[in-house]
Structures are given as C-alpha cells and as structure tokens.
Image 1 (tube, rainbow, N blue to C red):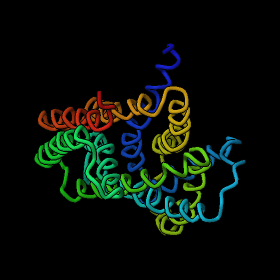
Image 2 (image 1 turned 135 degrees about the horizontal axis):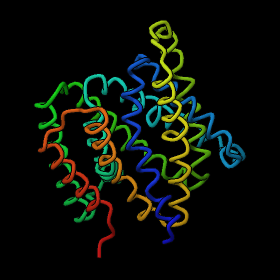
Image 3 (image 1 turned 90 degrees about the horizontal axis):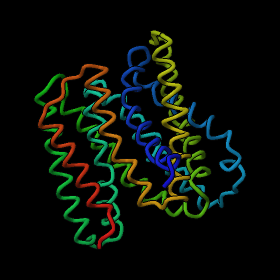
Length: 284
C-alpha cells in the first residue's frame, strides 16, 4: 500500500470519530431535533454533486427498499444520537459505536437463521463484554445516564439491521446512489419535526460550522472514501477504518472537551474493538 492508500484508509475512521464531537458542539447552539436535518441536508447536498450518485436508475421494487433504509438507516438512528448526547458524553457515544460490527454480525446471523462461524461467536462474545464494561463504567462516571446509553444501543440495533439490508442494494447499484437516495428520504421525513424548534436556536458560528463539517465530511465524503477503499483494497481491509472511530472519539472527548472517562470504560473500549476485529477477520 502506498502512503496515499494508508491516508485514505485512515480518513473515514478519523472523520466518523470526530462526528460525535461535532454533534456535541452543535448541541451548544441547536436543539437536538435540528442536528440530524442539518447533517443529512449538508450530506445529501454534497453527495448530489457526484455524478455517480445521480446517474444510476433504481428499479421500483428496490426503491421501496431504499425508502425503508432512509427510515431505519438514516432518519431513526441519526436522530437518536443527538438526544443520546444530551445525556451521554461524546467520548462514551464514540466508544459504544465501536461495537457496530458486533450488531451487524448478530443481525446477519438472525436474518440467515443460523449460527455464525465459531470465530464470529467468539468475537461477538468478547466484544459485548467490552460494551458492558463501557456502559457500566460510564454510568458511574460524570453525567452519563442509562437512558442515553440505552438510546445508543437502540441506534446500533437499527444500524445492524439497515447495514445488512443495504449490502445487496449497494452491490447492485453502488454505494453512492443508495446512500444519496436514502438520505433524501430521511431529509423529507425529519424536516417537518424540526421546523417547530427553529425558534429555539441560539445561533453561533462555531456550532454551525461543526454541523457543516458533520454533514459534508461525516455524512457524505467519508462514505465516498470508504466505498472507494472497498473497491481498491477489499471490504475486509477497508473495514479497519471503523476501529479508529472510538479511539478518535475518546481522545477528542477527553482532551478537547475535558469529559470524564473511566479507566474501566477505556479497557472496555479496547475489548470491544478486539471483539469487532475477531468478528470480522477472515478465519485462517
């Protein structure tokens, strides 16, 4: 791999790891219900600039599935995170998101109605031990609440379901056309809920630019780079970027936002990342 390949491999993880910091910054000026329309709006607008996202024609039967993805992949989980971060620190949110591959593996096994391979069972078991440690340790530190932690778990379940449903559509049409249309559906659904809260905005440029960065980079360009990585390097190697997310979130939360982070939660984060790696590695 060249230096450029390594940079592109790391980039999505860095951006997605910063997303929870951006959400926390956005909440300083915007109500939680406005965060998701802003990020999805900027993201959808950015993806629409790529011809590859617009030129592909989607069959009607598959368009119905993309509408479903717009609800369960974009509208619901992305709306949950701002409300969760009103109750849980950005570092804890990012650490718990490191468990996303575990939820994907569990949902895939349930959809297939068969047990996953033994290495995945071990990985899921190890990973969920780490998740429990993060949750329990974080609840006893700072202002983190069980409600916020529970909301994150709900969002991860939706991620697990939607990412399994998205795979065949992405294989058929490419990632960008599916993602752009799903974001468009989500935007139409969530904007009406956000309009009544516009009067509660305490506008500031810093939070606004955080929302621009969250939408343009975290909700659009990181997905473009990730799709390119999967095409060039293979999906297994490209997925390494996901393991960077909780590390970046933890560092930003603790060093920049000065959030209290329990040592046991950090250990749990490392265990969860190990579990995610074991779940997704190719058996030898």
